[in-house]
Amino acid sequence: MELRVENLAVIERAEARFGARLNAITGETGAGKSVLLSALGLALGGRADPDLVRRGAERATSSAAFDDPPAPVAESCRALGVAVEETLVLTRELSASGRSAARANGSMVPATALRDLGAQLVDVQGQGASSLWLREAEQRSALDSLGGEEAVGVLRRVAELWSLRQENQAETERRRSLRARQRGELEQARRDLSELEAADLRQGEDVQLRQERDRLAHAARLREAAAGLRGAVSGGGGESGAADRLAGALHAARAARGIDPELDLLLDQAEGTVEGLRELQLSFSSYVTQLPDDSRGLADAEERLELLERLARRHGGSLDAALARRDEASRLLQAVDEGEGDLERLRVRLAELELELASESERLSAVRGRVAQGLARAVTSDLRRMLMPKAEFQVRIWQMEDQDGIPRRDGARLTAGPTGWDRVSFDLSANPGDPPRPLSEVASGGELSRVALALLSHLTRESGVSTVVFDEIDQGLGGEAANRVGDLMREVANRHQVICITHLAPIAARADTHLVVAKSEREGRPYSEIIAVDGPQRVEEVARLLAGEATPGAARAHAEELLLAVGAGRGLD
Image (tube, rainbow, N blue to C red; front, side):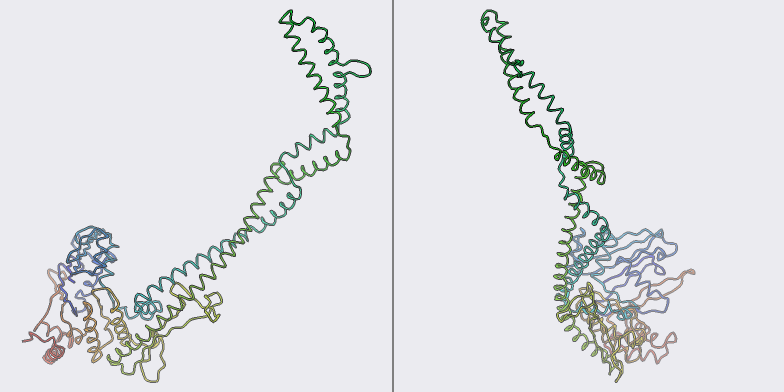
């Protein structure tokens, strides 16, 4: 990786060319080492703070170039429409007004795209990195990252099942809450439906009943009227009715048929009228016969009408409104019945989800258990190499019972979440006889730094990143422990490009490439530059780290010995 910076804080223009293996960055306090890290973060899509723009400049620029980016990164670039051949250059421009622009190989991209690409290329472990290992979530995540594709697959399935379980419980609660809010309405609907169904209402029944009631109430008058009309048509008591008289006159008039067509037409009409009168006679007779003479029927009709009118008043003012209320109550209660069925289906589905979630969580626990054993052995070995000869590192995995949790096969219910039901703790026994306890309780600053480095040395094996940055995670170390830490960093550098910002001579001496951030002043303004040192210059810098500003002859001699001892003493003469 190469880093180019312009007009960023104390850096006017600088270029850092990092070697393929272990790179050390040193410099005096305040020289700008942290600015270099800020520049890298800016190029990788980090927060664009306009205060970083050098005073007097209009804009700052930071570019990070990567040779032969891995296939996933190239694929991500192609998805962005960015052409990648042998080199990928991520660039960020920041104006003093706060506006920024992001580019990948010269093509404009969102800053979030730089961040996504950067996360695939570089892993930055800052000064507070060791404190991450005090958090359970980070410990569990680290364990899962070592589980490879198997852990990733099972973890993804656990997260999916957990999400489905949460959705199921939310829907169940929503339906129960709705039922609770509707309880009064449901009780009223049951009462109304019972009353209205018992009445066996029919559309238009009230109109028909009123007609029937009036007919029954006035049956005598109706019979009298119909009988009089029937008598007028058919006659009675020795008198001829209209039909008979018209028929007799028509019989006499037929003798004149055929003389005058107009009369013939009238005779035809008269014959039709006779037939009509005969039919009317029969209809009146039938009507009189069918007219009821039923006081009980009248009482029943009036009673039924009274019921219908009472129901109409209670349920909307009309029979149609009462019928609508009956249908509405029926639909509501049917929906409740269906809702009960839905609740039962939700309960059945919840049991299925929890069964599968328990199975997958158990699988995940098994994977974590296997990984934990290997990680504990490896970190313990590394700690002992770094002058913690009696250290014991353990990865503790356990579960907590919860009556609302996920059922295990033995019947116990366990607290669970999207990462399964495991609790994870990285425990350390630093001294003989001390029981292992969580890192947050037992580790000193130097011990925690060594644990962090040991963990990182193994976690980076599974990482797809090409570059790992350590920002002074060696704080709190010194002496032989620093030598051992440097050796472990060199091992990490066998797999990745490593950039280490350090203040320890033993680590700087082990670097394959040594860069110094040097600070100077011109015309009353601070300037910083990045210098690749080798030979005598490197001796002087290592001696400064060993002895401070004085760099006495003894410190210089010690620096030469140190560089020679670690195989970095070429060109010292």
